[in-house]
Length: 306
Image (cartoon, rainbow, N blue to C red; front, side, top):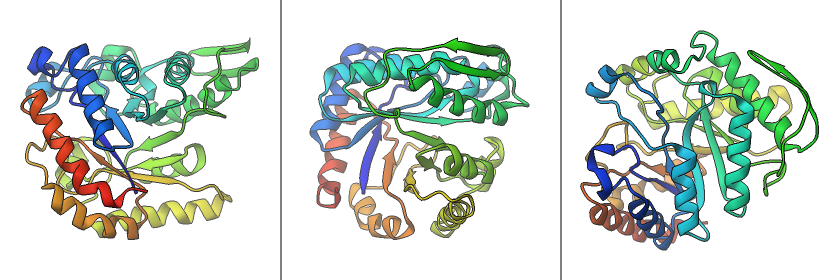
């Protein structure tokens, strides 16, 4: 089992206490010192104000934020959790990802999803109705761009006829691609086009709001993993698929996560279900409080690392 912790780059209300170069660097170093395997950041470039007022959030740009984390650390991996692919031209995503992978020495994990926030799609001029097709298309375009060879690729609104992109990522054939989302289509996307599946705990009410499938129990999670394995067998996939999950109790928006000891005691059940990474989206009232929480979780999880 490996462990990631989310940097609170969505806490823009906290100002420099959490949203500054010094804060990102200090928190990333604290996560590395605590033994975490990755730090993650979220993505919302232009959310509707009504959504934010109802409990949504802003965030720092994921590539810029992770570049500051990379510069402050040596070992820890850098995870976008998750980047909404259909918001962006896939070749620009490929360039940003390759740049971060090169400058970090091959530490990027690109977690992506199709997205759900219709008002944000509209503000960015992105196709909401076709977001699933655009996401699949973008994943193929990323792989093509990372080859470093001239690309022939035609997508919705873009055409490459012999264009090439350098430098190539340090990781070959590219940074791992983890696919977020709970729905059957996200599972199929992960199996067919990705290196990992990143579902998240979602009560039925929340699942409907974010346009995904509910995962309310460990049985629901096991069913999703079983579906992924069945589809892998059906399409002839033999490569292992990482399963990255935020433990129950860390649902979106929670401010009272489970205690470190409880998370530690539940690790065996997640591992038995097939989970290979646990993602902890920790909130913190202050930078010092966040770092203290990370140290506490790191100490509790230390004996369980692989």
